[in-house]
Length: 157
Image (cartoon, helix red, strand yellow):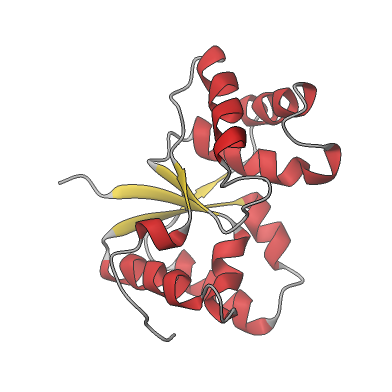
């Protein structure tokens, strides 16, 4: 059986230490530990994590050991992220959110998982991102929160 490749953004990692989100972020982390899913990480996450608290950096370092695929920022992902901006799906202040979407799309991730309900995990935005993705010849991207994806209940790190 093919292992699902899941792109996670930084909110999922930080969610491991947030009372509201920890049950599901840690559950997803447990899924990665068990090899149920393969994590996809990116240079964008690496840059965002640099100034994060040590415990968040520790989870990121652990994720890197789970056969993680590291996505580099390439021209085709930048073109998609730029197009999301051109179409007004996201404002320039949230370019990195669009870059997460674009990187996952270009890498043909099975899912993108995020706690960002304002700019990413939002029905109207998902439809707009996928309209651009399809127009540019990519498959639609499935976007969910960890709560919808993890196979585990509450697990502490």
